[in-house]
Amino acid sequence: MKTKKSRVPRPNLYLVGFMGTGKSTHGRALARRLGYQFLDSDHEIEKSEKRAIKTIFAEEGEPYFRELEKTFIEKGHPPEGCVVSCGGGLVAREGMPDILQSKGVVIALVASPECILARTSQNPDRPLLQVSNPEQKIRDLLAAREPYYRQAGILVLTDHRRMKEIQDHILRIYRRKQKEWP
Ligand code: S3P
Image (cartoon, rainbow, N blue to C red; front, side, top):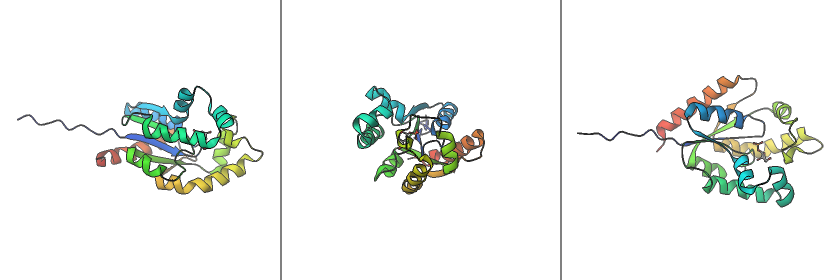
């Protein structure tokens, strides 16, 4: 008798966490290793809006951008086989941790304010950090968002760790969760 070949589930892997924690860099590498498609929520939004994130913030304001992020998560990407790097504020609102968890495996990348400042200071494309004291802004936003990151997924520390070590760690978590995926 022929047995049905069981198919290994390919739940999406969502990387959340603050700006500058390495979501896109690690996401791209992890997608290659898994043979998945890589998506970056910011890039997908920029493509569909045909304008840069900082322009969307300037022309429409932050709440409009947050709605675009929600729509992207709810219906703007494939349901499986993707590694998705999520913009730093995407998960940080009521209900979003649950929505993400219902869609795939969620990992939250964590870094100290000092590392985040060092990694983001050269890039003028993040509107929320274009302020007179970006370090204080990072600390304030981190404090407000930390509960959401914790609620959303397993935390993986990125400070002073080699890229490969971080990615191996994420993959181990993903493989374990993949086995339990309904
Ligand atoms: C934001 C993070 C950015 C981008 C936007 C707002 C945030 O994405 O979505 O500038 O609120 O933390 P990255 O985390 O990829 O930098």
